[in-house]
Image (cartoon, rainbow, N blue to C red; front, side):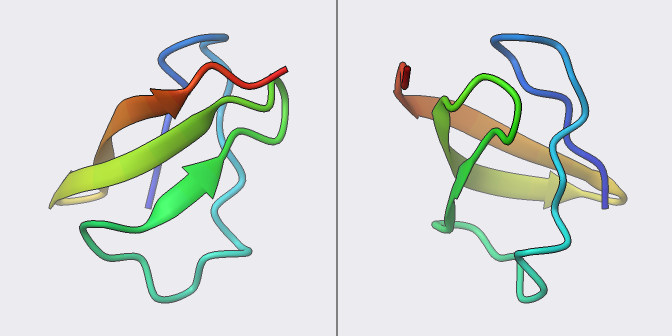
Length: 54
């Protein structure tokens, strides 16, 4: 699965989230923004910003 952070445009490391599903909350390992998984489209994860982070 692949996720590009909508804030910093870096790849988010998803290895810490082996059971990815809609509703999961994840954090960008680069900028610290909190994201909620809305949907999964093939290999892409679709998220929305929950908290702007650091």
